[in-house]
Image 1 (cartoon, helix red, strand yellow):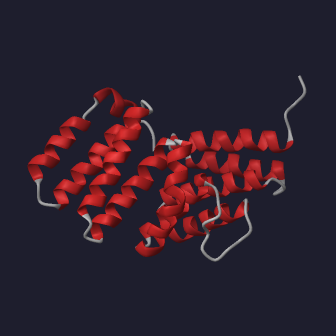
Image 2 (cartoon, rainbow, N blue to C red):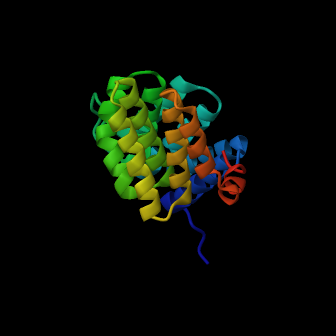
Length: 210
C-alpha cells in the first residue's frame, strides 16, 4: 500500500503524541510533535492548532504556565483570524486556553471565555473538556458568592455524564461537589460525595494515565 504522507500522516503522529502524553511519556510525545510539524510544514491550520495544544499540555505537565498560555493562545488563533479576546477558536484549544487563564487568576476573563467555550465543550462531548469547564464555572461562581450557580454547574455535569453514559464525568462531578461542600464547611456531606465517587474499576483505569 501507498505510504501515508503529508497532513494525514501529521495528524496520525499528533494523535500518537496525545496518547503518549496521557501515558506520561513526555519525551516521546515531544519527538512525535516535532515530526508532525516537519510533516505538515505549517500548512494545515488544524494540525497547527492540534500540535500547539499538545505542546501546551506538555508545558503544563512540567509546570510551565506561561509557556502553556502562549501555546494555547496560538492554538486558538490558528483556525481563525486573530482577535484581542481569543474567543473565536475551536472548543479543543479554547478550553485549554480558558484553563490557563483561570490558573493565572484572571477570573473575569476566564468567565468570559467559559461563556463561549463551555457550550461548545458540552455539545462536542469530550469528557475532559466537559469536566474542566464545568468545574471552573462552579469554582468561579463560588468565589463570586453564588453558591446556587456553583452547585448548578456540577448538577449539569453529573446529568450530562449520566445521559451520555460517561462514568468518569459523573464521578468527577461528585468529586468537585465534595470540594464545594468542604468549602462550605459541610465535611459530612463532602465525605458522602467522596464515597459515591469511589468506583474502584473506574479509578484503577484512570490512575494509569496523566
